[in-house]
Length: 178
Image (cartoon, rainbow, N blue to C red):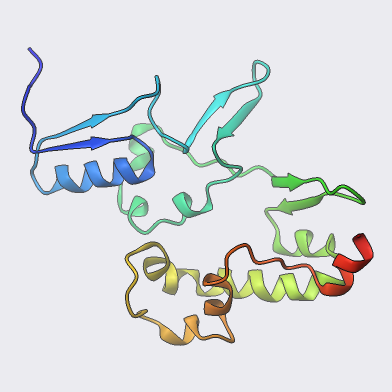
C-alpha cells in the first residue's frame, strides 16, 4: 500500500529538490519527491543523447557547484554509486571567428590558450580556487554578511561574484577578434 499523507512534498528532483528532501528527511519528516521526468536529477543528470556510449550532461555543461557544494559534501553519495567524473576538457565554446574557448581541468593549460588574457585568467581562477573553501558556504547559501568579508572585497572575489556573465577577455582581444 502506498502512503497517502506526507509531512512534505517536494516537486522536482534536481539538486535543490533533493537537498530539500534530504534536509527534511534528516529532520525526521516523511517526504514525497515528485518528478515530472522519467529519471531523477533534474538538470544534474547524464544521459546518452546522440549516440550509444556518448554521454551528455543535461541542462549544463559542467557541474562545479554540485561537486563543490558544502551540503552535498556532507552526504555519503559515493555509498550510493554517485561519482563525479572530470574530463580533461570540461567545456568548449566555438567563436564565429578564430579558435574555440576551451576549459581544461588545469588552470594553467586553459590560461595558455587565452593569449593576452593568460595572466588575468590565472589570477582570477587561482584566486577563486584558493578562496573557495572559505567562501563556498556564503556563495551557495542564503544572502547574508559573508563569513570571510575580505575574500568578498571589491578588489577580490566579490568583484567577480556579483557581476553577471563576467567576460574575462580583454578589450584588445574583443576588438581583435571582431
